[in-house]
Image 1: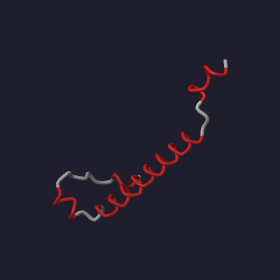
Image 2 (image 1 turned 90 degrees about the horizontal axis):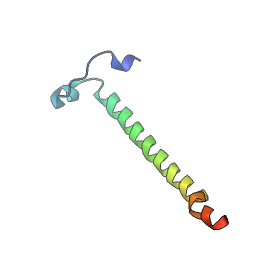
Image 3 (image 1 turned 135 degrees about the horizontal axis):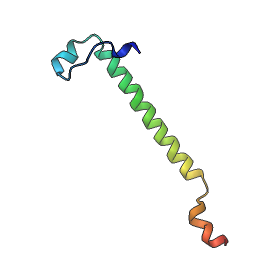
Length: 60
């Protein structure tokens, strides 16, 4: 991966002057969006799935 070719220092001025800063921010944005989407999908699946552990004792 060529993103890791130079160390990124955790100094705000350095980050702002860095040419890769916009690229890193864009990557972080897409990752955050993907995380949010995955969480929504997981919640939707959990709501749609039958709750077996909850209803198992009634069936037996």
